Each structure stands twice: as structure tokens, then as C-alpha cells.
Length: 384
Image (cartoon, rainbow, N blue to C red):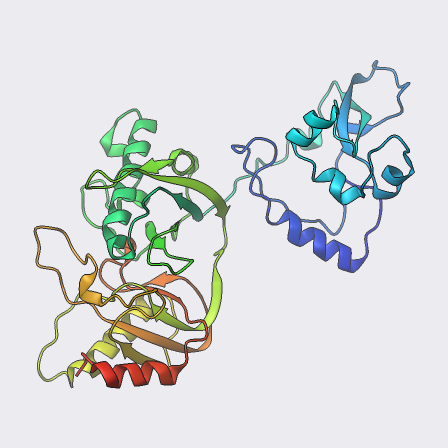
């Protein structure tokens, strides 16, 4: 889209921030990536505004709905009372009740669509979005508890694999390794490039309310289609299904940046402590630092251990979380506050089970370090 006018630097920046938030244009399956260009590209436009009396010999004249500028809207006496902002915010119900056939801030403009598409446009390389992050909002009469993070993430993974299998004509050999985390022979993938399934409790009420699915590799078209079809997942014990609404697709990490991060789910190490490796606390701190390195994070400058969650209405001890499969003895889980000397993007997950939301760290917002220390001393540290 091209506009024949110049914006101020401030307005251009505002427009850039607005259009960058667009995930789709028109219907919700019409995925787009939008940015403001500093200069108009040298292309031949195949659809341009024209005068009402323009002949259709060159192409087809079509009427397009456009927005009235605020000043033009105010000059029109037949428009309803109220300002331009109120007019563009009218709902369909408002329009029907007031008897409007068109929204009051709308005008129709003639556009000419040329019969022969521009060769410049036809030769342009097709757009390929490299989406790596998908975020969902969760909705249910009974949302899962944060203690069920790992089991909920596992159900999401299985459901996504099932959806992708249907897209691939029920061929299990073609199920996405990004979703499964395994190669064609069933061997676990290495390098953490496959999908993470991170259930989140963003309002901190002890119930999961969002889901972040992201991968080190971009999702292909069939994987994106699977993510789009992920609409609900079942719950055990006859609880109602959890509905999922896709609220964001992006190539860049859409979440927060902070220097201090706190455990939301228990950190579990994949290795075992042995004598001769220093105290258990020193060894466990070393394990956290190693895991940060494995995931491309900087080394934390401070690791302070905490006995339970610090951002839920009621403290949840780490042993209360589901930490493994039913048939296996669950490993011990631990929590801590990580402090870095530079801002880090998150949320992120490290340690064993990190692809299913274990070892999840959320931004540490205003919880005083002295309070953590006092609580640790009052309850007794489990790391020694």
C-alpha cells in the first residue's frame, strides 16, 4: 500500500509501531507481516484511486470502503452527534439500532484495477514469514492449576502432533520433528531447536491462562496450519475442555525483558550429585549456570534459592508440581531467583523437562530480595 503524503518523524514511528502489531489482514487466516517503508519501492501499482467518471476500458472500476478524515467528518451535517473517534468505535449493534446502512465515518472511493497485473509484482519473490512463536489465551470454566504445567504441556504436544498427522494424510513418518522433538527413527533431538510448550500463569492466580509455543527453527506452512487448528484440549477427571485462542504469531520473541528472573515451576537437573563435587548447593548452582549456557543465556551473576513459588496467591512447594510421568518416581525440584548483569528475554525454561514448562522462569517484578532471604531463613533452606 502506498500513500501520497509525508508524515512527520513522530507519526511515522507511531504508524510503524501500530502496523507491526498486525497479525492478519482481512480474514484471520490471512497472515501478514507489515512494516513502514522509508521510501516507496519502484513498482507499477495495479490498483489506484480514480475519479468517479473514469472509464473501465483499462480495467475494472470497483468501489472501496475508506475512512473519512476527522475534519471532513465534522463538516458533514447529516452525521450523528459525537466526535470522529466515537464514530469509528460504533459496533454493528449500534449501527442497526440507529438505522445506518453504512458506518457514519465511512466513504466510498472508486479504484481502478488494471486488467494486466504488473510484471514487477508478478516477479516479486513470494513472502515467506519465518514465524517461530505462537501465543494462545486459555479459556475454560475450570482452568488447569499451575501444578499441572508439565502434564498440560504434554497434552498440547500430543494434540498438535495429531493435527499435523491429519494434515500429512495420517502418515506418522511425516509428523513434524519440531512438534515431536524426535527424528524419523524416534531418537530425541538435541540442541533445543524443537518446540517448547510453556503454559503460563500471567495473572498470578495459580491457574494457567496462556500458552507459548516456540521453536528455534521457523514453522513451515503445515506446522503453521496445525497451530492455527489448535482450538481445544481435554482435561482429566471429567473437567471441561480448555479452549485455546491464537492471539499472536511472530518471528521475534514477543515477551518481556528483565535482568532478574524467578522460578515459576521447579527446576530439575538431568544429572546426579556425587561426593567430591563440593556441597550440594554449590553443585546445584553450577548446574543452573550450565543450563543457562546450553540455552544461549548469559551466566547469572547471582543464584538465590527459594523454597516455593513467590507469585501465586498461596505458596506452592516444588514437590507439589507434576515433575515426571506417572510410572516413574518424580525427581526433586528446586526454585531460585536468577540475576544477570544484562537484560534477558523471557520467559525461558531450563533443565530437565524444560520443553514442557518445567524450569520455567518469569520476570521478577518488585519482590524484594531481603524478603526472599527472610523467608528462606524462616522456613529453612532445602539446599545445603
